[in-house]
Image 1: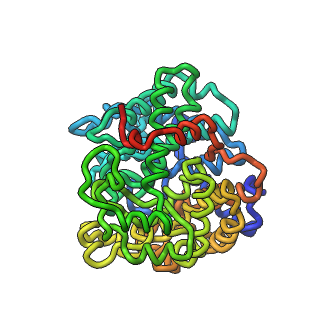
Image 2: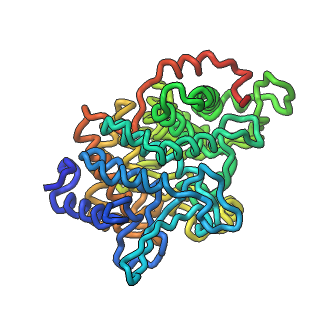
Length: 481
């Protein structure tokens, strides 16, 4: 009998098959399981799908922690903490504090036995050679989820793990070539790991940054030198995202009437956004009500695409206010046919098409419209959907999505993603037996089956942080001292 209580969504054979995929994905080091590989498809010919991706493993962590399997999480945390970028072998060593996108275990047969070593990819082997900005933030969330689930604070105090936490936070809090609290990052540095026009300040990274900083506050010891710096950055980042990224009908009407070419400190339109920054489809989309966080913001640029991961994490990590959380789920309800399918949720919406696709993606054939990152449908998103829905009190919507998707995914051998405007086709280049597609159903289904159980990845309201954000002056929003 499976340990995951998801019979409401899958029959016994489906649950057993899901668990088998997750177990088969185990990556071993020194006799311990230290992660799960990306996919287990028998005919797999793409090498890095046999590696453990830090961001992917977060979903496996959610599944493991919900049934008390903590050893693999602890081993993963220690393994990644011990990795150092200066061992990557790249021309320019990655910065200290960066964590790998993925790693694998290489084994060499020797006369004195088998020698094992961990080989990590910091971008030196990645498509496009882009370093992962999100991995270290996911790692912080994993450490915090482990501590929250087990009550074990010793792991975060372990010298190797503690040093890694300090390196990550110090690195991400460094001054930048900007005066913003958000992170400036290149295309391809997150889950959307190919060129998709999300360079600058993409929402997914900013929400993960917020969550990683909140995790850091819980993991650092009282009185640690970084605590004050982390808190101040959270205040500036939280106000900036809530104020400048949020879109609803009222906000759109304000932006369309902005003055332009302003200079000074107290401005109505500090981003110099022109009325044409709001496309017609957005105005029509918001006419029925609801709201969401925009996909990107920068000088004279407002990317109004809907990015599902960032919006859902905004709710579960406490970035979205209660009103914003309700507005987001109202929007998802209004546009369920566009955003929710019987195979998962759209990663982005709408797709880049025609000339926009050609220029923004570099005519990437994998990211054609309605496929992969370009408005493809992802089963993995069922997990953050459930997590956010529980926080917002909208679990029924998530349960309906899980009820439709779980049997479909099992029948289709757990694809990586789906194609088409309504997610009706298995992705033409999707891998089967994709680990995080399985883990999303196990984790999300268990959260729905146990509504009273805490979610290890969710955050409660922090009254001190909320008060500080509310009291922050508008003219200090973008300044980092």
